[in-house]
Amino acid sequence: MAAAGIITEYNPLHMGHVHLMAEARRLLGPETGILCVMSGNYVQRGDFAVAGKHARAAAAVRSGADLVLELPVPWALSSAEGFAAGAVEILKATGAVSHLVFGSEGGDAAPLVRCAEALCSGAFPEALRKELKKGDSFPAARQRALEALLSKEDAAALSRPNDTLGVEYCKALRGSGIQPVAVLRRGAAHDGADVGDGIASASAIRALLRKGEEEAALGLCAPAMAEAYRMEREAGRAPASLERCERAILARLRFLEEADWAALELGNEGLYRRFFRSSRSAASLAELLETVKTKRYPMARLRRTVFRAYLGLPPAPPEEPAYLRVLAANERGTALLAGMRKTAALPVLTKPAAVRRLGPGARRLFDLEARADRLYALACPDPAAVPDAWRTGPVIVREGAG
Image 1 (cartoon, rainbow, N blue to C red):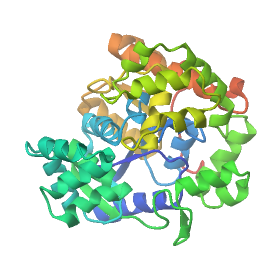
Image 2 (image 1 turned 30 degrees about the vertical axis):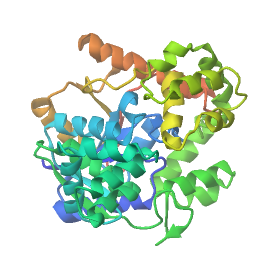
Image 3 (image 1 turned 45 degrees about the vertical axis):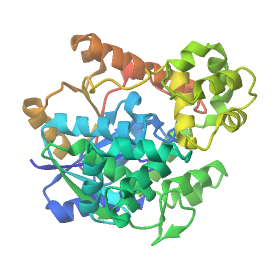
């Protein structure tokens, strides 16, 4: 069975996400399987997911996906480049994916492929060095460096959030045989506060949840996501919030020495010293981030650094994931899994206990994920209601089960 890959967070799943899955089948054929690689309990902007990974994965399967695999936390809390590289490695390792489908402000993969090729060219590092010397942020310097190698129109992709991530996907896909497919984004802009075409951004929905406007927020989610969220909330597992965990995070950061921050490879501008000094006295995460921030680094990178330090993640993700962990599947998804047993380049993990037979690298990665999940529980209304990773298998959605 041919499958289309989608890389996502579904934090939470909204109608724009449902539209993308439907477009994948419209473009590639109705029998195309939809295989998602989804962040687990932590998301790339540096935050907790509002609902747990199994609930979000099950909602995805009830909304058009067939199989959801987990993007492990070292990649989920990485830069756009690391996030894309890890997710693409998982898609490649399945041996089942022919196309990667993603949302795009431009709706055309060709300029994104040209940007990816230029970024990987031998001429780019020197162009970037020249621009960084001017003191602007890394994203601004990178876009100007790209303008020296491509047309300004092509380089403008790096000014648009979805297209920027699309460029990283295209970089990671080089030589893989998987074809990129850009679908014009519908609805509100990424991180936009409005509701365009009746489709809100995930950030707008999260903002409503933070304000306590739950019904308004869930009305903008996919129906299966709204139902899953309500069930998680009633069980005491949602919403996960940074505020509940703030002092635990600050306590962990105060234990770190300057050498621990330096080991996170924060660059050569003394950023690790700023983190070390601020972590010793900051009374809130907002205060810490405000003290640390510079023009050079986006706030999302600083938030990821805080979470990586909190969770004890390595400075950089491993070269590749050690397994393919299944979070949810339907009947077509289980058929994809059956095929992957023959085609996959990495072990397919459905039972957590099976990781003990996969070698030390797999065990270390799963131990890290399990520890991160235990800390995620502290951000939930009832930490005791969050099941342990070692006892949680995939959700199998049966036909007619909703």
